[in-house]
Amino acid sequence: MLQQTQVSRAVERFETFMRLFPSPNRMANGTESAVVRAWSGLGYYRRARSLHRLARVLRDEYGGRVPMSMEALLALPGVGRYTAGAILSIVGGQTEPIVDGNVARVILRVLGDERPLDQAPVPELLWEWAGEFVSAARSPAVANEGLMELGAMVCTPRGPKCGECPVAKSCRARARGLTEVIPAKSRRVHRREEHWHALACVNRGRLLLAKRPDGELWGGMLLVPMLRVTGSTRRPFGDAAERAAQVTFDTSACRLHISVWRSDSRGAAAIGKRRSGAATSWVSRASSPEVRVGVTARILEAAGV
DNA sequence: CATGCGTGGGG
DNA sequence: TCCCCAAGCAT
Image 1 (cartoon, rainbow, N blue to C red):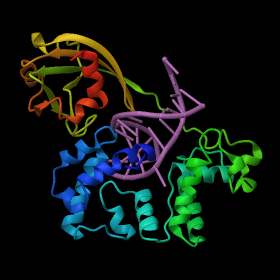
Image 2 (cartoon, rainbow, N blue to C red):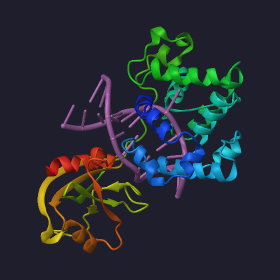
Image 3 (cartoon, rainbow, N blue to C red):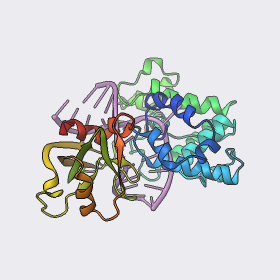
Image 4 (tube, helix red, strand yellow):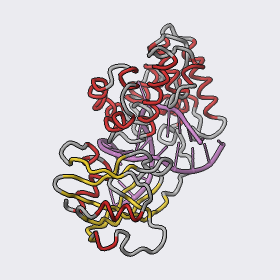
């Protein structure tokens, strides 16, 4: 959960999530969609799907336990250098470094390095520095936690609290007045614009949802049926739906301009004509978490259903 | 190695 | 309103 997600967002979900999946075996014995459902709203849903796959690897190959070696951890789906380092150092007390966004910011400021944190060879430099740091520490867990926490609480992206910083005296960014420009911003990518149709389709308290195709935006998620506009289709769902609203929705990579259509029991057939084999299902509005989250919630609200 | 992947809060 | 960014990873 903590991969590229603020601690406070993860904390909100953690207790519930752990009650649902108290052990790797319990998750492995359940379905992927159960995990994705519990994850809904957190974003980056590949993490949820990876986690379910990971649980099955633990069940089938490691007796339901987490292997405590770098090699084994890095081979698990969704586990990279950061996650493996965190598990080994914080859980296992091993001398392994962690570099997250916070740590990178602290190191670059201390060094007065004005390069973007993702520009080669900066990442390797950061891992080496963090490796020397944790090697010199009595407790790898405390050292790594402390370094991340320093970045999160004191050496913040804007307005760092240098007056409270234990290493302010040896910080080059501080000495040169560069704390606001380090770390340097990397080249910005333009958010591409796409046009989509969405179908808000309600019948007797149930809502039509469709599973997004793997490899596309929101792959594997259960959402209000959505189609990307490719040609110049005026009425993508025929006469079965009426135009209800227009909404804009941003993801990290693109801005979606969505034409929202409203329909009833006829909607499923309209979707079926558009998409061969689209996995649609009617779900209860009251008990389905998808209804209250993300793009689906926005579309339903805009459609007034 | 550059890019894609969500969402929500803060400035 | 708009941009930045968050306990990254896979491809």
